Amino acid sequence: MLLITGAAGQLGTAVIQHLLTKMPAQQIAGLVRDEQKARALRDQGIDIRVGDYDDPASLDRAMQGIDRVLLIAGTDEHKRVQQHQNVVDAAQRAGVGCLAYTSRDLKDRDSLANRLMVGHFQTEDLIKASGLNYILFRNILYMDFIANVVGEQAFETGIQLPTGQGRVAFALRSELGEGMANALIDSDGENRTYHFTGSQAFSFADVASTLTELSGRDVTYTAVEPEAFERQLTEKGMPDFLAQRITGFLTDIKQGQEDHVRPDLEHFLGRTPASLKDGLKVLFEPFIAAG
Ligand SMILES: NC(=O)c1ccc[n+]([C@@H]2O[C@H](COP(=O)([O-])OP(=O)(O)OC[C@H]3O[C@@H](n4cnc5c(N)ncnc54)[C@H](OP(=O)(O)O)[C@@H]3O)[C@@H](O)[C@H]2O)c1
Image 1 (spheres, rainbow, N blue to C red):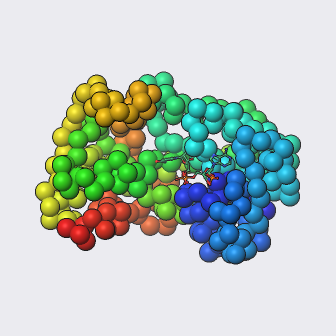
Image 2 (image 1 turned 90 degrees about the vertical axis):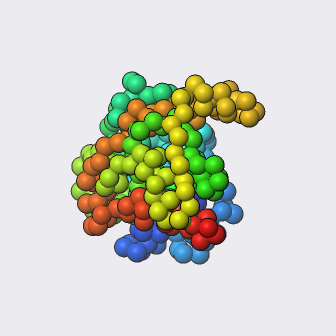
Image 3 (image 1 turned 60 degrees about the vertical axis):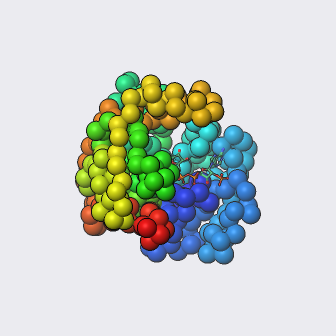
């Protein structure tokens, strides 16, 4: 039985929907915090288990009869390393044969401006130290994130970000989920680290020109200095810690932490991952259509 944590979340849902096309629902379990969110999964025959990364006893119950676990990274960046340790400990107590983890494909942990991302590397370390067999999915930044950070406003005011000419090999979250599902199915039990990226890296200037091409409206890109960007956020009332975190995150893009292209996702999809143009066409469909 394969347990997917974060089963009601976006990545967990994508993984499960692809697993369901290739294996029986009876072999899939999903960990959720809130059973109400899991109705659709239960209707599809998924074995729903309720648990919280903060609650080791609930994790012990959830791991009963489980031989493989996909740990979807927790969203509480300040305490998720301990949460992940709790999941790894429970997996060890349950005698799980393989633990997979959704890490991030960042180049250099020591020079990260967004220090909260170091938690992914620390989680990789603790998984390796546990002695469990593992699969590490080093996922690139979701292409979907572009819609969050840029949004409809891009068509009115253009894009102003502290990302310089930094590029990212964006991949759609749905394709990351599909690639992970296929890799879990194909797993030979060996310890593996996969780097899941798109097939080309793009800057936010490329995002702007692609949105211009798709919409017929003029979308510009202006590179802003990180300090000025952070100041703008705090002047709009954003708490300092959050402004710093967002600016650090975007500075890491400027510094090329995510500009590498690797073949692993293409291999597990069996096709080239969606291009920037194809992805943006889907992600910005309502805005493009309105234009
Ligand atoms: N590659 C990227 O670009 C990128 C971008 C953003 C985030 N991420 C990472 O990837 C992860 C998955 O992304 P996503 O898009 O699926 O996010 P999401 O939709 O917010 O899903 C996160 C899932 O984690 C579960 N979770 C959080 N804290 C938990 C806890 N204490 N105990 C049990 N479950 C917990 C949530 O459960 P509930 O449904 O109960 O809330 C949810 O199902 C995120 O958590 C984040 O670490 C990656």
